[in-house]
Structure formats: structure tokens, C-alpha cells
Image 1 (cartoon, one colour):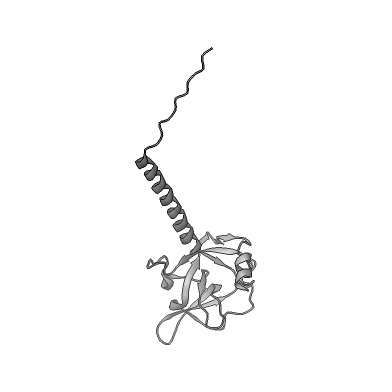
Image 2 (cartoon, rainbow, N blue to C red):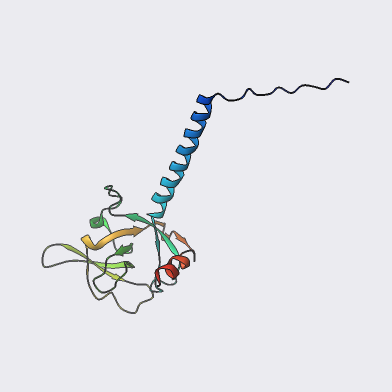
Length: 159
């Protein structure tokens, strides 16, 4: 009985090999860039001040006030109940707390009163619009949280 011959593909030409190689390189570059963008939109929770909404070591998804020149949120448009990340004058790491009220300062500027949900009192200083770095993304009233994956980052940073 004669053997069936399989249809063999012709060997790729050198131009096809180069095209395939460039496509592969481009796909790796895209994957890396997407990873960098996604990593810029995640923030590790460093304390228990917002429990039970999220815990130390959780990672929250954020919208930044300035990301590579693009304004994703306008810090002036934040409202009571929003959870923000801001540079505190009283703590060395960015703070993730909820806005509990909004005040107008003697300078006519808007200021936020913030508080950790697990804290008995509001934060010691008002938060200016310029201090706000980001807002935690929520669906309904539920913040987007990835539980516990930030512990390795806390360990590496010595926190």
C-alpha cells in the first residue's frame, strides 16, 4: 500500500522570517507597555485605617489626577464619599482615605476633610486639591480591590 504524502509547507523566506520576528517583538513591547500602564493604576494599602473596606496588603485600582500628562480625574470634582489617595503632610506614605466633608478655606480654595473608615477621628490636616494624587475606582459603592497581593511589595519596601 503506498504511503500518503503529506503536503509540506514551503520553508519561510527570509523576509517572512523577519516579519514574524518583528511581529513577535512588537507583541512583547505591547504586553510590557500594557503591564506598565496597569501597574501605574494599582496602589498597595499600607495600613488598616480603611478596614473593613480594604485591608493592609490589598491592592486598589485607581484613577490618577495626572498620568503621563493625561488628566483622568479632576481633583476639584471629588465629592463626599469618594476614596482618594493624597500626599499627607503628617505621614511619609500616600494616604488612602475617604472624603467626609468639603470646606472652603480662607484663601477661597476647596479643601477636603478625610478620614479612614476604621479611625475614630478625621485626619489631622485638611487636604488641598493639589495634594490629591488619585481616586479609588468603585463600581456602585464598592471599591475595586485585589485582596492581599500587595504583601510582597510591603515586605520589599520594609513597611
